[in-house]
Length: 211
Image 1: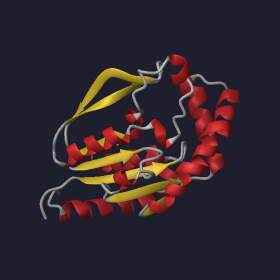
Image 2: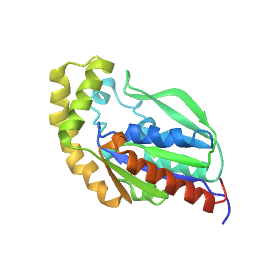
Image 3: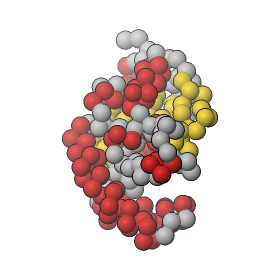
Image 4: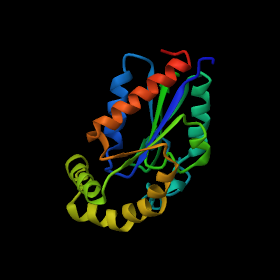
């Protein structure tokens, strides 16, 4: 088999621990050739909309993402071509005029809440993971993060969780669990599952004549 990058999709709700899982896997391959591609960079450009309308954006809905561009970039990387990754500016709720140059790598981790929602993305993945964490832990982690890192009030975090995050999770994110090859409970704390994943990835890389 010829050399081909391996694509790992890592999904899960906000606060599930998918970022911890992603970092753990990334650290195991950092001495090799690995690229982290976050779905959050691929929110749709909204520069054609007035700011008032942009402020109402639901970032937990599938329609918020520019999957066409993400798929185009993923295919470029799979053909060992470089991409210019977009950068999203949350202060103006649209894409900035900056881009990040990313070179192709042998391992590509695609991470985001809805990376398993689009069949076209799933078809490009070699391994599909879903990080499954109880709702109470997810809301606690989100509260701590948003209050500490984003200066949010407790009331605003709870209101957003109840009105947007929870219903979007139940309607769009949780159902994608059925597409996962492996479900990892409790995120980054599940060292056994992460070790098994690393072993599986190494096996595929060896088969693809990369390691």
